[in-house]
Length: 152
Length: 152
DNA sequence: TGCGTAAATGAGAATCATTCTTATTTTCAT
DNA sequence: ATGAAAATAAGAATGATTCTCATTTACGCA
Ligand SMILES: [Mn+2]
Ligand SMILES: [Mn+2]
Ligand SMILES: [Zn+2]
Ligand SMILES: [Zn+2]
Image 1 (cartoon, rainbow over the protein chains, first blue to last red):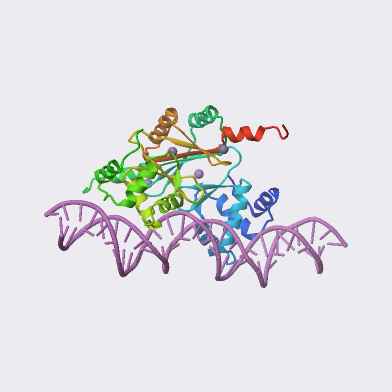
Image 2 (cartoon, rainbow over the protein chains, first blue to last red; image 1 turned 120 degrees about the vertical axis):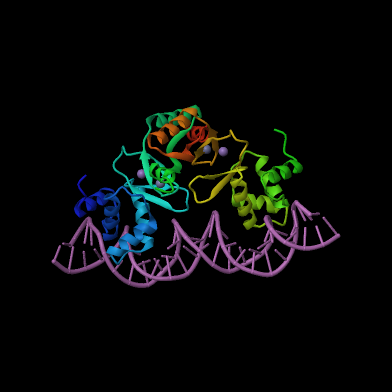
């Protein structure tokens, strides 16, 4: 995955009817270049570090626009702030395991679950538009730490 | 399902180490007597109507206690406020379909999905504690209204 | 390349659900 | 019935997000 150039990002924005402002380019670049799941404040602090002229309002407004255009996914882990991750094309749907101890996110896709979700909708005459599924617990790393011998 | 008496509710609270205050009894009664999914403000307004002495802070504090004791489930439909529903014993886990048009909630349980969730966790060495799954879309009733002939 | 206008931004006020604080009231074991 | 511990009321505080509006910027067009 070659990192997107500024020109790539500019085009990406314009292809979605969004004006290519320096703020939006920087935001999209940050999201595109990692697999992290950021909250708005993290994005604000990171961009503010590099580029003095970014405000929180712009972060929120730009994220909203990017989510509308499906360039970015908005996630709700249930802790009071939204997370944002780059959306990599049309087929990147995935769900998340969330470690309640270290915060690590593991992505997964289970086609049987996806199929059963559609089946449930059909049984209920329900026309689905989106779904969210988060499994909370303790990740493999944190479990290993827990079982570490106390002395040794 | 015979409606729980005040004595039943009192015992229910005390069995969970919670003092049986009039506010908690009223709150638990309200939740126990319907299958609705309430937000905190709805509960506040409803209780306040009947019993002058209830404050929002108490609603929130009591809900937290009831959720801790697993007498009540806390749900996050992603619209900025939490919902609360009565938890009916240990085997009542279910997930939700949420109509984006009329707000109707349909509950469901799909054991294949539940099984696959555990499988995913196992594959990742992940120890699950809880999960949330919400499917958003348009319910059967709203779909029918939509397809209603415009004149007729 | 320079202009004009519509759109985007910055700064901070406003909002809204939820949590916190503190003085007062209530519960419940004794 | 009594008193210590816990719960409550009222409203202030918090924190994420949205809104306001004066100022700046992007970009289609001359
Ligand atoms: Mn993800
Ligand atoms: Mn339910
Ligand atoms: Zn972990
Ligand atoms: Zn509906």
